[in-house]
Image (cartoon, rainbow, N blue to C red; front, side, top):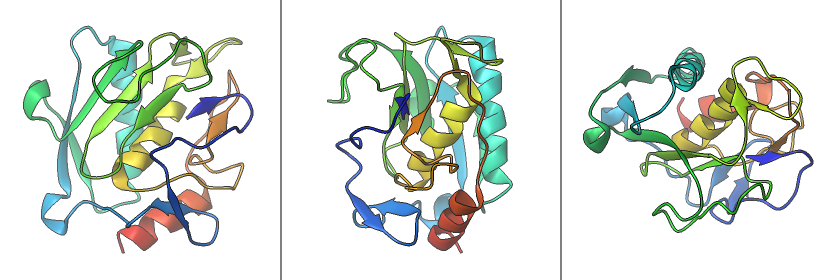
Length: 180
């Protein structure tokens, strides 16, 4: 997800567009045998971040066949969340405040990284980004949604500072198409 105005798509988001929502190239998705996913946080993740991401998982769980449960075992969790700066081992380094707030990868990779050079808060103020809204967007990627061209959708590729967004009908239609 990018801050501010819509700019170039993530390089890992080659799209197959259907309606307004979109899927990653090849429509990767979690197998039906793996709808119970665990998630864990990198060491040092704040309790505010843990709470915000847990709320985002709960929101997606209400619209999908998935259940998400937090694990303390980062190494074995299906989904791994953390705050990183610069090169952090996924071949998609953050480069300061270059517009990329966070990124996540298509199923079944499971990595979701916030850019640690930005300010994220649970109650957004000018100059910060709403942690839960960014999590909703990135979890959409983890589940297989690519960027939408519907500005109100959580899967739209950009969000202004101090903005709270939730799931939009476009996001819900997309996820229900991918996981009927």
